[in-house]
Structures are given as C-alpha cells and as structure tokens.
Amino acid sequence: MHTPQPAPTRRPYLLSAAVMTAAVCTLTACGADTGATAKDSSDSSASATPKHLVLGQPGPVQELGQAASKFQITPVKVVEGTHEDLKELDDPGKYKAQKVAWVYVKAKNVGSKAAKDTLVMSDVGAEANGSPAQRLLVLMGDLSSRPKDCLGNNGRTELGTDDIWKPGEQRTVCEPYLLPVDTKITDVTYSQGFYKEPLKWRV
Image: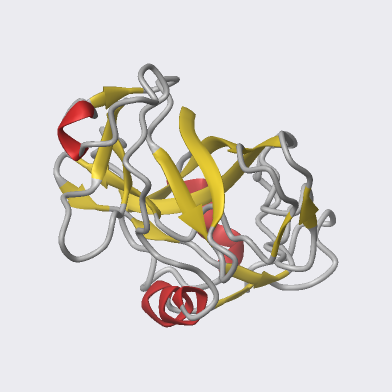
C-alpha cells in the first residue's frame, strides 16, 4: 500500500477533464476573440496572427468570462515531470506509462474594468507530438511534486473563480497535464471556438 507523503494533508481527488471543461465553459466565453494582436492592434483580422507562435510571444486579446473581460494570454514555459510524480495517486493502472508536465501561462487583464470569475486557463491546452495532452485536475489536495511557483488562477495552488483581476493586473498561471512518458510537450494551444483553428505556441 502506498504511504502518502507528509506534505499533502488530503489525498488528491481528480475529475474528468471533459466534465470539468464543460462546467468551466458555462462560466466563460470559450474561444471568444477580438482578433487584435500584440504587435499591431490596428489589424483585427485573424490572418494577422502567425499560425505558429513561440513561447513568450503574446497571442491576440481574448474575451473571457460572462462580462467578456479582455485578456492577453502568453504561454511562457513548460516544466516536464516524471512518472514518479503520479505514484502518490495510488492508481498505477490508470497512470501506467504516463508522466506529468506543468504548463505556465502569463495572463494580463488588458481591459479597462476589473474582471471577476475569469478562468484564464479554461481554453489553454497542450499537445505532445501532435496528440492532445490530458489536463490533470486536482480538486482536493495536490501533488507534492507541484513546483512552488506553479500557482492557480487565484494566485494559489488550487483553481479558483472568486478573485478579482484589476485592470492591468498580470499573473502567471500554471496547470498540470498528463502525457506518455516517452513524449514531451511540443505545443501549447488556445482554443478559439468551433469556427477557428486553435492558436499554437511551439515549445
């Protein structure tokens, strides 16, 4: 029987990424987009955005939340973990031959109003050699291997929706993803809805 590590006080509980994503999208304007780019705000066409961005390059301004708050999303780094990080979940069959990777995204409220209940990571995803990586959602407790600088939407390790983003406020948000141990994250993605291709940042 696996002995829990002393750091977490509660056993991690997970929820299906598909279920959580559906719930999140009821609170957010998933994939909404003003089309403005960081380099040229005068050009609002989708073609103004390069098809393949690189980490650290800001994407177009997005509208998030019920109030359509304006945010700029910039993936900045990926930290690869190992299969050992998942052993404390005590489900070797479910996580066989998988590892965890931590995706960091810089988000900034570029609108003129404060933003509330805005989950900036709701449309962020990752790919490992062209295949989608599964988001690892921890509802209670956390992985003890989570990097100390890997903070959630509300500036803490847990995902939160009740905080306020002031105009101009910028945070670095981080979430874990699952992928096969013999691959690595090759792209960070951002969904722009059903009618546009997702944005991609090459890692």
